[in-house]
Image (cartoon, rainbow, N blue to C red; front, side):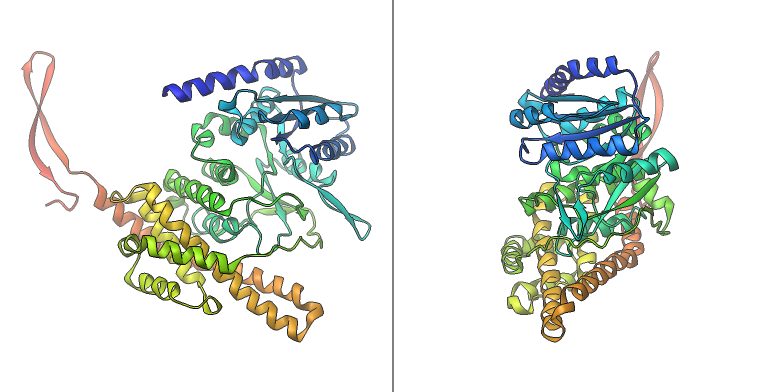
Length: 478
């Protein structure tokens, strides 16, 4: 452990000293609801009140704790949290991580998990900026029922990880849609609807696995990589996973798609390397998780993509990294990318078969290539992500334009169905190409095996072996 890491761990332990003492005073609990926050003063009061109602309504006989852990700048939000009336049977633990070394999202989430683990409780996680609205006499977005939907599968069915399934707009969360979702299905055999966006149910058993895994809390994971890290760690450790239908999620959008793409790519690529023994042994049988709750007919907020901007970023990246693409990708893929770089925006298409091939090529290079650094590979991959994002937006936008001219009243609903079909076909393309990827992984691993010397031991000084080199054998026995 280097000096910076040691100092951060010491600061973390000091920040948690008093909260853990309070947890010790509480003793044990059945349920912890955790809310990591920065300074979402406009929304966090509503979130706390809503989850407190859910605990009182659905778990009146359980011992419950609301744990809110904030970043250094969260003073205003903390004041609001402390004014919320929690109701009978619900205790509160709320504080800030006041040392700037340990003030990020991963640290606050880890602190919540430490508290839940100390209380030996199952955990439901919520984001601090969730909102609700009334539509057709129903509550859309955050509702007290969400608490039950996240906790019921753990309490009654022995589930370890509960992932929400949202009614998402087809242009929402492109990194989750086009990268993480198909790789979860093809590599990890989990056909989930997407990433949870900071909302999860985690069993007390799985909490201990997360807290014991230093990779989960690495600085490399980043705020936007945490969801992928938690899900893949659960899969690698054979956790029982399900989904639960929550309708629509109303909250803040990701502010910086480049950071999202980069962090989620790094995490999913790293976790594929970590879990290689598992996914190679498991084969290709896909396991759709059980889905609790009924699918709701709530309509998500519209997301407006920027395909022209994404195409421009793709072209800039191609011009910068075309030499690396020639080294990593097949000749055919390189030719296709060059054509796209010279195409008009209106004609720009980035088909799913090309995308899957490129993802697998970059994945192999990231995990097994020694000629390029991982950062260089990530830098070169990001323009490809913009290309796929733009190609999908162009394709679906063309469908919507045609449908709008023919049947305007049904255009959005039908476009949504077409988009979901395209997203599913993309996943099937990843699954189709997985055997070829697996075979190339094995070949690359063999090629990377070091030349191992056969040695013998000759006694030179009593009790001290002298290593004498006899011969070198290459991986091909030459």
